Image (cartoon, rainbow, N blue to C red):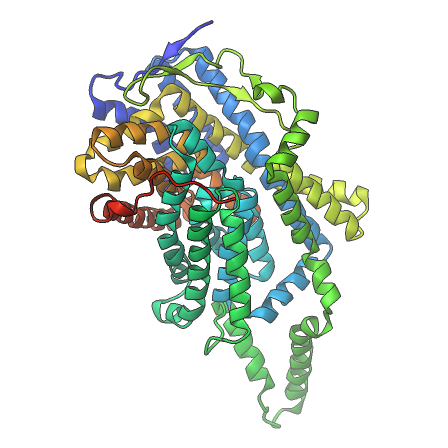
Length: 587
C-alpha cells in the first residue's frame, strides 16, 4: 500500500508555504466575495486549486489527493447536504399546506416585535436544533422559519449565521467535545467544563450583538431586558450543564430553558414600541392614514378608500382571530415532529441500534476508503509521533441526521393530509431549486478534506503558533480557522486539537485551556465558512447572494473570535485557578 507523510514546509520558508496553503481559500473566498462568481463555480475552483497545490507543491500523490477529495464530497452529501435538503423539504411542505402562515401569526401573538422574534427563533430555537442535529440544520431550519415569519431573506440568512455561534461547541449531542477528548487524550469532563466557562460569556453577548446587527443602538437598548433574559438564562444553563452534568444535552437544555424563560417574561413585559421593518412601517402608516377621517369633498374617493381600508384591516386581523389553539398546534406540528426525530436520531442508544441493523461496516467504523485509509501520516510538530490518518466512510443511510429530518417531513406531510404523489412533487421542486447549492456544498467539503489530508490545514495552524505569549489569543483563531475551512467544530477539533495540546505544553500553558479554546474559538468561524453560507442561502432561496452575506458576517465573526481570545487570555494569565482539573460528571 502506498503511504505518504505530510510535509509542513515544502518551500523551505514557512511564510511562503503558508501562503500556498492558503491559496485554495483565497481563490474560493476571492471569487465568492470579491468577484461575485456563483458559489458552485467558486467551490469547484477552490477544490481544483486545493488538489493542484496538494499534488504539485506539497508532494501528495495524485491518487491520495483525488481520493481525499471524493471522500470529502461523499461525506458532504450524506452528512451535510442531506440534512439541508430534508429541512428545506419540510419547510416546503409547511408552506404548501398553508401551515406556515398560521405559525407566523402564532409567533406574532407572543410578540409582533421583530427584534424579539429574532431572539426566539434564531437564537433560542436555533440553539435547540444545533444541540439536536448540528451540521447546518439550525441555519437551514431557523432561516426558513424566519422567512415564514416575514423576515427578509437576507436578514434570515445573515442573522441566523451570527446566532448559530454560542451553541456550536455542543452541536449534534456533544459531538465536537467527544471528538476533542479522543484526539487530545484529555479528560472529557475537564474539556467540557472549560468550554462551559468560556462560552457562557459570549452567550450573553451574542443576543445583544444579534439585535444590534439588525437595528440601531437605541432600538437595541429598548429590548435590553428581554436580551438579558435570553442571554443569562441560556448562559446559566450552559454553564451548569457543562460543568455538573454531561456534554450531550448542553445545547438542548440551554435552548429550551432560554425559550421558556423568554416566553414567560414576554407575558409580563413588552417593549415601549413595536419594531418592524421599514416597508412594514410604511404599510402600517398607510393603513393608519386610510383609517383616518376623510374629507367629504370627494365622496367617491372616500368610499373607495374606506372599502380598501376595510379589506386590508380584515386581511390583517382575520388570521389572528380565526386560528384556534388546535389550528396553531397543527401548524407547529411539523417542527415539533422534526425536533422529536432529530433528538431521537441523536441519542447514542437509538443510533447504535439502527446502525448495527442497517449500516454496512458499522462494527468496524465504516468502509475503508480505497488508497486513503491509513496511507497519510501526520508528523511532528502537529502530533507527538507519526500517526496514520483514518479514512472510513460510514454509509449510515438510516442513522444520518438528514434521514431523520426527511422521515419527519414525510410523516408531517401525511399527517397534514398531503397525498404521496404531491409529496414526491414537492420533493422534486426542493431538489431542483437546491441543485447549485448541492454542488457547492459537496465541492467545499471536498476542498476541506484535501487541505486536511495534504497537511495544508496544519501549515496554516502552525503559523499561529509563532505568536509566543500571545498564543492564548491567537490559538482561538486556530479553532476559528478550522471551522472556517471545514464548516464543522468537530472537524476543527479533529484537525487542531493535538496541535493545541503540543503547543500549550511547549509554552507552559494549560492543555485543558488551549484545547477547549480550539472548540470555543471555532464556534465564531461557523458564520463565515462557505458551507454554512451556502446552507443559509439555499434555505432562504438566495443562491447567488453568498458573497454579499460573507462580507456582511465576516467582521462580526472576526470580532467575536477576538472576544473569545480576550477571555482565554484572562484565564491563562489572570484567573488560572478557574481552569478545571480532574472533574467528574454527575449522572
